[in-house]
Length: 85
Image (cartoon, one colour):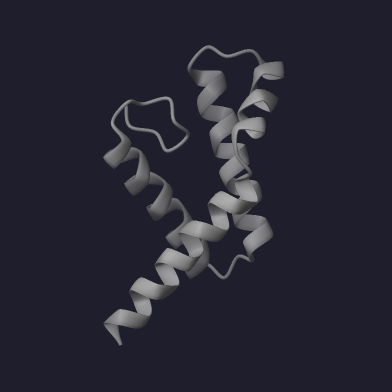
């Protein structure tokens, strides 16, 4: 199963899933904080589905900031869209 949260070992699929998630939220007009919160919720859900305990989801937060992840993907999408104009 390809997931963006890092559970899958297929990083190419992981990146595409995360990109699509963020791009859809941008198209819906969500702000950066809402997108970041959505990424965290999605990641937490995937970890729990993968057998992690609820308290384990906080450990993933220590590995990297969801805000930074969202910001990076948003910048990528914005640059890519500018290149299409």
